[in-house]
Amino acid sequence: MNDETKNAPRASARLPRGLSDRGPAEIAATERMLAEIRQSYELYGFEAVETPFIEFTDALGKFLPDLDRPNEGVFSFRDEDESWLSLRYDLTAPLARYVAENFDKLPKPYRSYRAGTVFRNEKPGPGRFRQFMQFDADTVGAASIAADAEMCMMAADTLEQLGIPRGGYVIKVNNRKVLDGVLEAIGLGGEANAGRRLTVLRAIDKLDRLGVHGVRQLLGPGRKDESGDFTKGAGLDASQAEFVVGLIDPEKNAEDHVASIDIRLADSRIGQEGRAELEQIAELIAKAGYDDGRIRIDPSVVRGLEYYTGPVFEADLTFEVPGEDGKPIRFGSVGGGGRYDGLVGRFRGENVPATGFSIGVSRLYAALKAVGSPIVSAKPEPGPVVVLALDKDQLPRYQSFVAALRAENIRAELYLGQSGMNAQLKYADKRGSICAVIQGSNEREKGEVAIRDLVLGAELAASTKDRADYLELRAKAQFAVPEAVLVAAVREVLDRHSS
Image (cartoon, rainbow, N blue to C red; front, side):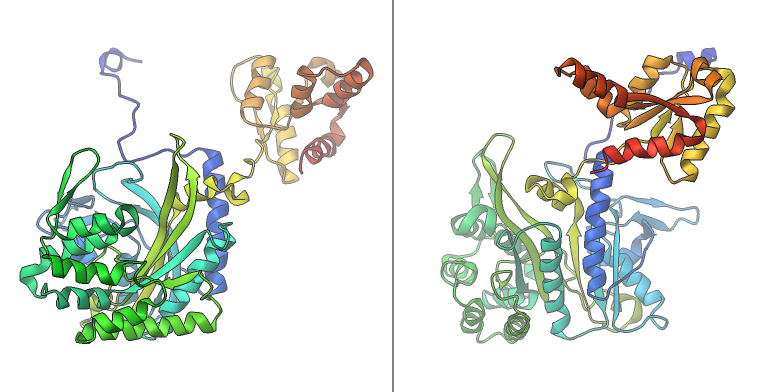
């Protein structure tokens, strides 16, 4: 280390807010979870595709908060030719670009899935991250409402395959055309009312958390929460607010949401289009046997992104688990999607029908942990067999042991540190290894290796058994074998603890 390096300020080992590290156990559990989702999507005929993390900012489109400041809401930078590039904020906009670019080569409808990391340049908070993973499936080129119904059925099947029991979730379905009809009916059409429309939709979206009373406050003058913070409302008068609440109130419309939409939006052309599409979805899911509570019509479902043009759906977990403070918490939404018939058309000058569903992997992972799903609760994979390096002049010999184990598909590594035998065995314990291979000068003179069963060794250290049992356990915990049967002896130890 030179003087300049010594005097340089020490870098701070800290992680930016809104980001997280993952260890091997969580990575392995997530991979098992992704494999189950992938299997479910493939069962429905979807195939994999992958798009890059970075897109031209204009390809992400008007759905960014502010194109004059393209780093507002997303992470953006200029490349060498001064073009704006952005990290993708979801997987749908890049898919739209991919389909448009390869439109003539792809079969239509085009059914694909993709898992990947997305990025949001937003203020982080509880459950809100700047980097997280999504797993999407989309059908592009199908105008049929059957494509939307199928997304809902696949969402239900996927949650059950992941270990969420029937009755522990619901797929809620609405239609953006119904919401447009509601806004039109209360006089909030036109560009002049764009801001108030968004406030109304945000209020509706809080029904699950705040209840009807809280939504009514947000539709009117506003609401003060428990901390004293005040959220300004949409400023609707009493009759306008009551019109909205009457449509979304679950108690008033528990029996037939579609009929309620029909009555309340009888004079709205766009609202009736949405109602008719929901009716088709209800019929399709009934014929397929999913109308048993797994999928239901719910006019309170909003979905945030502007590009949805028709049916929208949300996968909602209904069970409660104890929080850190002991109070019950509900995970709520772990995925959603909808129809976006205008997104691909931005690149082609004509609308291309499309619908999709996205799972929030991190949130669903936390929910699966909470319910004890074996997919994410299984023990982590054991560490590799560790071959100790006791004599530095024998490294080639030790390396040959490692090679012999790997040749038989047994995970193995040679200890590469500078520590002595006890520290090397502690290293193997920290790695979660089941066994270690030891050869000192005594074993080498006899042409043998010692096999240390680290699992039985830990039991031996804590043993309170009688002498006969103790001696038997000790004999199994470490024993010598000829070098020629090293692989067979190691496999025998691994098999002891494979269940």
